[in-house]
Image (cartoon, rainbow, N blue to C red; front, side, top):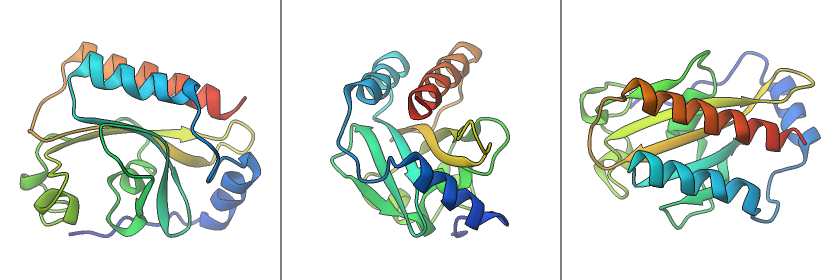
Amino acid sequence: MQNAPVPEDEKERMEAVHRIAILDSDPEERFDVLTRQAVEKLNVAISMVSIIDHDREWFKSCTGLNQKEGERVVSFCAHALLAKVLFVVENTLEDERFHDNPMVVGFPFIRFYAGMALFDYKTRQPIGVFCVKDTKPRKLRMEETAIIVDLADQAEKEINK
């Protein structure tokens, strides 16, 4: 397993995360509706809006999994955080970065992941990720990619309100 990378400008990124003041805030319907839509429209097991903290990923919204946070070092979203485009892993068992990840070999048995970085408008620092996960490998169709990108865009707008 490859640990999630840490950006070179992590100090500035964390300043943006704290400036937005979203970590450990209460659940909000404006985010929950987006993760529910992703699960329904894409027929995936899990969707979340995650904020990447110093050593954890914290879930502002999570549909399909009863958790509030996870370890950053094993986080798929911490990898997606640094991607310039939609970060997709079609089959986790065939990807050297993730094949032995605890979330792949154990519950929730992730086999597919797609995540889009969410940015702070003021600093353009990536602060989180909108993602979908599934328990079976898959390839995204163009219209499915568009759904994820659109929902991520909406989540980013909500974060920056």
